[in-house]
Amino acid sequence: FINIYLIYSCYFLLFIYIFNINCDKVYMKLDTIDYKILTELQKDGRESASNIAEKINVSVPTITERIRKLQDSGVIIGFQAVVDPASVGLDVAAIITVISGSSQYYKEVTLAAEDTPEVVQCFSTTGNGSHTLLVTTKNSNTLEELLRKIQSWPGVTRTETQIILSSYKSGTIFPILE
Image (cartoon, rainbow, N blue to C red; front, top):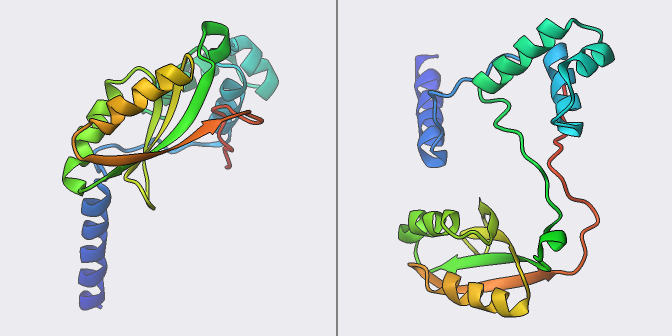
């Protein structure tokens, strides 16, 4: 029994090390009311506490306190306006796979992506590349300039780009299950 415990403990520690899990972050235990609040806020982040309270049949102070706790615990990480890129002159969107020669440049690529305004999202991925970027630019010329910039980042050997022609589903609503 002790040997099995030690083996699983070692695997757990290895898992934490490999995936760089921060054990200091502890999420609050969510209940049915929390899930309902999160579902409503994902639909409309500006929904008033009184409207949410009415929809899920609890008091307004309960809603405001729960929302505060969800924010303080890191379950809710922010509220923001979602802007139509084309309406502000960003007509080209693309997905760029970044292929680097070595994992030693992993952090530098991540930092460069964070410092590049055209990069909307940066993902660490498996497969051909180390990172996948979602970018928006004004036009194909600015996309070409951005690609040259990304290809000059430390360790980047090449990129693969897919230009997005149309978007049929986008958003930030996650399927919250109890």
